[in-house]
Length: 368
Image (cartoon, rainbow, N blue to C red; front, side, top):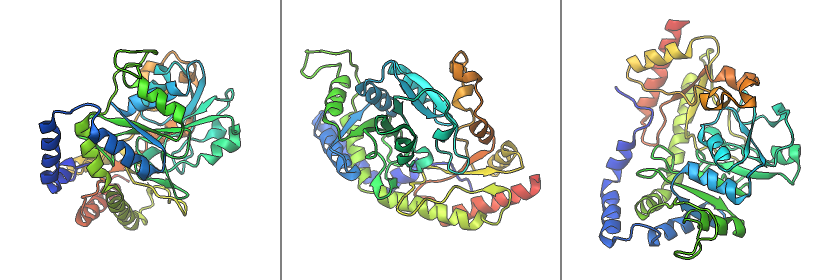
């Protein structure tokens, strides 16, 4: 039995008739950009999140970059965590801001702001990594109410913190609709969510060449618009996101049950009461055995687990000349060599979860 990390083909096969209908409707209308499908999705996603505004963009990276620009981040210090995907920090740099890093909590893999020893940041950018909701009240308690909080919610579609959706917790949030996300498009796509009218107006201009009217441009913007095909696909998928996230949670619960007695494995943290993790990823780590050896043997057994992420931000070559490249981030640097993402997707069967767990435990017994 071959088990992929993510299987998009199953989702397409399940809803192929509907997807074909959506594509035909958009293509036959020849309204591909800034049309009704985009407006419908933006409204429906805003209602889903409980915010006033959602604006569709070309990618999650663009969403982070434009949101930071709309928050006037240029020249300011933006604090984020050392174990995120590089898009988070590239967006900070692309917005003209200064990257500041902190280490992570070894239990949750989320940012540990108490490990930060630099000047007070102007903006804090927590990442709801793996779909686990980060408690932004910690940021307010540490840095005060004056700090601007922007959520990197690119992995957190549908996750909740104390009953509120991730994406509604800060001054604004960025989402990615990369195909493998819990809410994934048929290509690249992203969005920002905000309750701030001024930020929304700024994003409207920045995504459309810096203009509020056609051929009238009053600021340096760009072209970053979610097209109608992607918006229509996402609007359909949005209707199923809670159902699909529940399937992921069911798979996660079964993984926990099957792996709880394996002493070599550290399982993901339990989500606090009142919160919901969407289990974009199910990430375990190993205590004393070689992660890479286990991964190799899993692949030999056609179980295609993965790693998110094998290199921390401070060790990326693009940042070799930055001051933080020489700083120590002991927790994130150690754990990046021990973590492993097990197969996880809504259509994954109980039999497949059991197979992954059984093979994994067998391999661990072999490599001890």
